[in-house]
Image 1 (tube, rainbow, N blue to C red):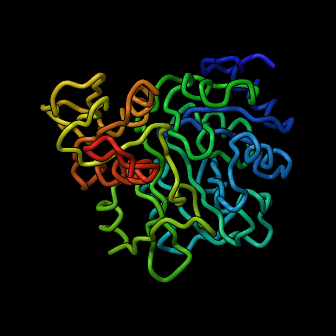
Image 2 (image 1 turned 120 degrees about the horizontal axis):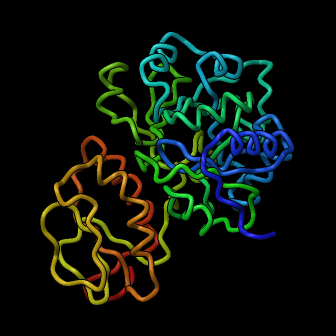
Length: 328
């Protein structure tokens, strides 16, 4: 198979994508967060292909994307908290983990065999147009190999997945550039499973204090919880105050740490929204074998900075470059 064609969003491209999905094939499509790898969530064979293409553990559940709250209510059970949050935040970068409806048609594999589903309505006009046209729940993790940096452009998808999928719907770079925030509302106390495109402080104003759930490598309830995630191929270290020999620099704000073989600045003005949108693309730019590692300057751990740091911490677990040049 040749590389998948890039199709700019138009009526013909959407019709083609719908036909492929209904035939059990996979397509990549943009959202406001990252590009998703979509399949018919009710088709167990298609869902299994997602896991195979991504080399994703089958115990790691997928997020189900639908066009509106009414479609969600056919799949999961909403309590008052969930409905109020959905009405406030959808369409948008929020995923809710809720109990499955008894007659939910989504393949159990998509939910990793759990009695819950992670579900959202994306805040991207053209993604919503596709979801309305296909009229099916779409299982869609990020369109990249499992454990690697998420894609925010069609080129990133092609680089990661090559000819393993049939089609890439291209609508340019993703606006937010970080995955959705995930809230588990299956218990009495709301739980934050993943920080993301909606800041935690905004959610706490509506829900009260959230219980923070740490990574889970055995039975995660939602994507992004594995401790080895968002990983670069070369070592990455956070909160760098100086550069080691051969390190590339991922900077933030109006200063750098000195000369480096390559420098990308997430936001020279210190804008966390701009930094979030640039994060994955710049991580990819610096993830090159000619560099000994990536040094990341300190990023404030508030607002979207919290979500940015949550992406960097798992990447940094691959190995830290010490000042003496050794990996620890």
